[in-house]
Amino acid sequence: MRNHIAHNKLVDYSGVEDLKNLINRIDEKITEAERRFEETTISQEEREIIAESYEEELDQKFLAGIKLGVMERNSNQIKLDFKYVIENFFEDILHSYKYKDGLEIEVSTDIYSESIKIPKKIIFKETYGERKMSLIIERDEINELPGSISFLEISLKKSDLSEIKEKYIYENGELKLNDAGEYVISKEDKEDFEGLEKIFNYIEEEITEKFLSLDDKVAELYENSKIYKELKCSSCGEEAILNEDYMELQKNQCFFCKSLNNIYRCETCGTLCNEDLEEGERKLCFDCIEED
Image (cartoon, rainbow, N blue to C red; front, side):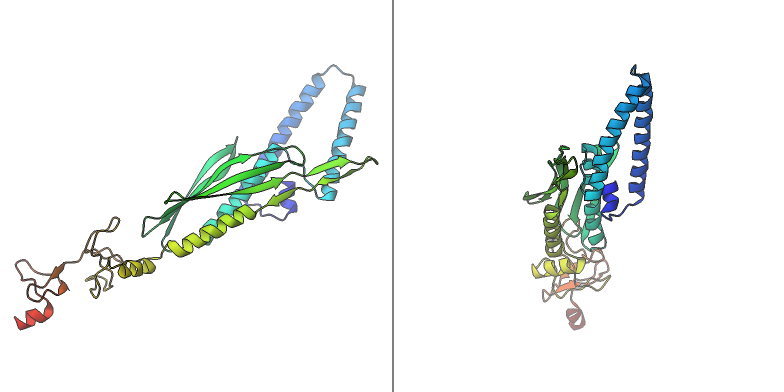
């Protein structure tokens, strides 16, 4: 959490709650440690020597890390880092496409570690088509040893079964004592966001080019001759009446307003018409009605 703040990252309400929970857990561990420490049979003098020695060593390394700007994280700290990275990544994606016409988004969460919840999956669905794409947090590998590498594997799966896999990588920091008995940097802690950037760019390209808005979808259907040309909907007046079934819509239904139109061919000249006829009325176009 200290590293999160030091890097000027946003702390939202859930972050504050996580911080409170961590403080409470640390308090509980300290209380339990104090109780167990008091139950030991070593003398008070020995206790003080052990405590002072441990405290001094811990403080030296911790303070050296703060001063040098290097973090040696344990497994739980790395998991929390992963949690915030993925939450921010998902938030960026959802914010970017929140008002995108032609796109529906579903988000699911999962228990990541004990009480830590992490976004697990985003499903992108084409509103006016059958395209689908899933962004999934596949797995992680966590290594808390100083200088070791941990990663999150993320995959992007499309409805055509193609898949892209990338990783967010965290490299743990490492401090070592030099000959003078001072802590120095052996390895800096690093975060590699390149994999996330690649996934984000691919999602942007896919959604921009293939997940069409309502107007663009009608234009595509019109171009592919799946909409009656030069025939307007009797309800909304748009040239968007389907000439075949499409997804949940049926033939003669308007793609815009979903109204069902009465499409027929003129009995005399064969012209395609869209008129409301009374029962028993002949199926004629306007011109043929006048001639008749």
